Length: 490
Image (cartoon, rainbow, N blue to C red; front, side, top):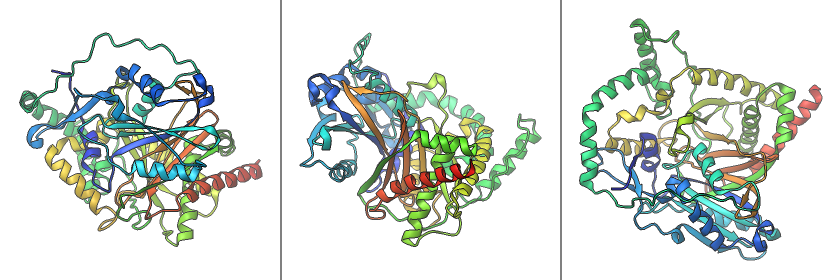
């Protein structure tokens, strides 16, 4: 039987929330210059051959899902016995003139389709016909299989540091593609039962005192009270915890980007100069991430002012944080927690917005670092898988419609390489991240640094925010305002 890897509760949550309107995949749009490739072009044969040669470096590309009967345990990844690279690597072309708007329209159509769960959960499209002779690679991979850091590992596996692709050693042995049956999976669950009570007790004592900081429980009624009480109980009985972490009572305003999603996605793409961001960082004594979040806050404030939806209280942003250890590199899956911070959309002055962000991010990081990683990512491990899936769908459905959303905006910062990368000889010009939104949380801003720029990818719902590109313009305008403030301060 092929080697199996079990999903965590967090991995499975990205499967559970998926509907005909809520999609669980993330992706990226790479813009490539094919003139540096052999023959001055990038073909679908080049794409498939390169990926075929490196499949053994990217486990999710050959693994499909298998479910445990009756959903009494989390699903597993197993080798796809009928793997077909031709299905996953596809080719299309834009009609002339191949404009930016035409590209975005095609990307939106492709991205607004769910991945086939009977196969490995990824697709890559080679898109020809872009203006200037460029080509694009549009990738889709399910979030159940990767997070931001493991997505970056896939990037490093597929891309090279020069036009000449590096030599990659083949796998030592051929993979076993024999699939498990339901009986095999049930027996694995039965064998794990004797360890479950001990694991449950040990992890409950770690997780419950911090339940209100776990993303899955953030904002739930009673979570803060439970957390404070259990923290004090641990201290009373000698646990190694010096103080009870007090969390400020913050709530996300209801309304902005909070409607139920349509089946359609729309994207805003653009770039800002990394040197300009660092100039602002140095002038104000803050961090690069503070500046990035300030760009988002300024753009969102401007957009909501224009639409007449700007609330008096600050919006809340969820900022994913990797808790992947060195030992867990290359294991894929999700090893993330999150910080929940207020966005200064209620502040008019850009410099004051940046100062506010620097303050709240410092406090959020101190609280985050004081908590065990298990408290931030394993809360839902205690919920039976079948119940967990139903609960995740219910929470996603009611968020923003009948209750306040847990947060309004997702902001992710994925570090990328400062040097040129090449795919099958074609030079990478930009890598725009594409991500997840859900009912009640209809805006996701993900940025990736590459060379001397920050590539921006904003994911939104087409019916809620059709003018999403104006948010990219707003981020660029906010940077200009901060640069002016930095010059004035100097």
